[in-house]
Length: 296
Ligand code: NAD
Image (cartoon, rainbow, N blue to C red; front, side, top):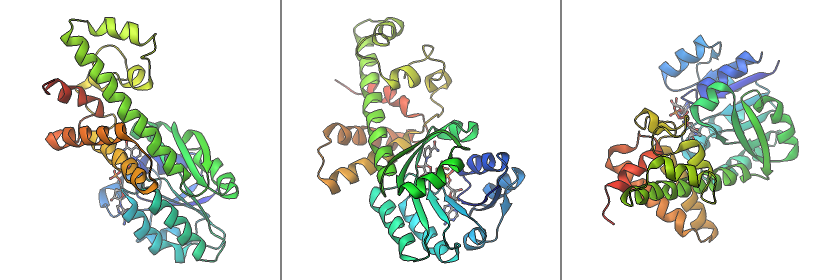
């Protein structure tokens, strides 16, 4: 049993912390939202009065927060209270620059703290079912220490490289997903105009060179793939707002690093228009409806 502190008990952090309790760990949590704290308490998490109080006895501290500014602010608050030699893991999806800064802040404590950026893929379903994929950045020592804990919340834990490499892998992966979903949706919209049935296009593309993860798992038209949000009126799933967040992070990183990502930029713009038209809470595959409404 490990003493674990968990800060950020929202849609993702709540079920992740609950899975650590189920695995036999002692989990102390904190969240600004009383409702999230109540839910976590009912899942067996001890709720502390503040984030620094939550981390005091922990060997492993995990944060799961909305964005980079929240992570840097919470880490500033908690790092001085964390035990010498403990491991701090941020599982939020944040910009690479803030992730690297968080590692530096941990090192600057000069108390042998280990740190890891370890964002996840798999959504709320993966958090509940402990089937997430973790993409980790940090030293091998930090990764080896985190792996047995993270594997209680996920199916795959991949060491991507040094500080920030987990966030880099996450935004690159999700840029592929955003671009490929638009490609799949455009193909169905064009097929419709050409009188092609959804079934015929799926039967061909799913066994031909057009096959991709977005088509096979999140097909944007209903009744072809059981895991598709299109079967449920585009209820997420993976909300368009989160796809937009990840595409914007990819664009920030592209700008900062000088990478050319024209399709990533276009995808960010299209998801921005889709989300801005009142669909930020829809599944990202609903972008097909937005494309249908555009004039060619
Ligand atoms: P959420 O908004 O449900 O949860 C975030 C929680 O952080 C909230 O409960 C909020 O009260 C808490 N919080 C904010 N500031 C705090 C502070 N200073 N101290 C303590 N608690 C604080 O968001 P989520 O869906 O759980 O996502 C968390 C992270 O995971 C985000 O970075 C998101 O991009 C990423 N992510 C989400 C999904 C998904 O499908 N929801 C999938 C992959 C990755």
